Image (tube, rainbow, N blue to C red; front, side, top):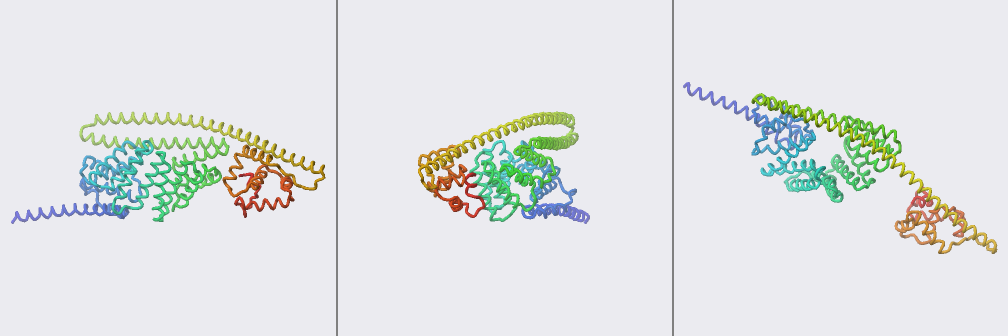
Length: 532
């Protein structure tokens, strides 16, 4: 009887223990399923789990699922305190179904914290193991992040990896259009960095078509931003500005990075007042954005020939650049200290205190070396930037002098030709008066017209050829009138050449506006032709 009671009590205790464990497992299982569709709900479920009662394996799974839910909620995981718990557990368990996901999120964490080599190692493992487990989703996401990391250093390989990621995802059942768009944008940027702007534009247009179907303003804003980058690479600053405006205005909420991109587009398009206006509306809250802001102001001041302001803006930009370096150094030093501390504590428990002491010394020396190297690089960069600014100022002044000389020389040539024609008209009038002719017409010979044409084409950058090309319907007589307008011939001289009154000449010029497509506009034909 006593034995039966003992067995029953033992079974009851085992049931209760198992029941508690299953409760925790079910909560984590539910949260894992919710990460794909309702990540905020997944976080709520996980926040209700008592972590103190979890086993080592359950705690690792809890930490990873929590990280996934944060990522799916749009939060960048830039703190590895929880993720490292999962990483430490799964690190040597390649057969576990969660191994690849853990490596992927650890790689993403390193990518966000500028640890390139560590990021590449984790993402490569994630891609390889997920391929073995036939986890296509994790594989393509790992490859996509891998291509992002290497596209600055190895753009050709980045193009290949980005293409593989896109192809894998396109074959997945129920593939999300949102992910498809961003995979195409990633491939587009890889192609652009590889120097293939045409293919980049094609890929970006594919993303735009899908984004237009979704009618999601934020996604359209991201697509427009990449389109602007492509057009900037092509040196088409007008189109780059148009797409930057669309990106900025389409975004549902204020995005400082897109505002800065728009300011840069205005700068490239020489719209300095618009550039300044958008910069004045921005209030950067970190060193990186402040550096970009002042650097744009610096370049704008140079274009405006305001070199004192340019120098002050450059100094401010360097100050925030230095602050960025300091923040990165502090962050890396904090990370290294945290890493060393964790390893040291484990080492003490295992009797490895001496080895870890050497590790601390080596890490400190390494960090000190990096600090000295960055400070040295910064000083060199600042010195080089000042020399570059001075050279740019001298170059701009030289270009301005040359430009002014060219304008002066051109005006002399035009004035000479006008004087020649006016003298020809004056001479012809006197001859007619001596002969007793009553006509007011002073005809120009074919040789005269040919001489005028050759002169205008030579001095005015192929004016006649450009006019023929732009307005092919213009007759030879029309072209001759345009040449005289280009030479700034007065209305009285035109009246003598064509044998009509000055009033008729003015009417003729008004009618001719339709032939060059400016009828209805306030600008005169003479002003249009002189500026053509």
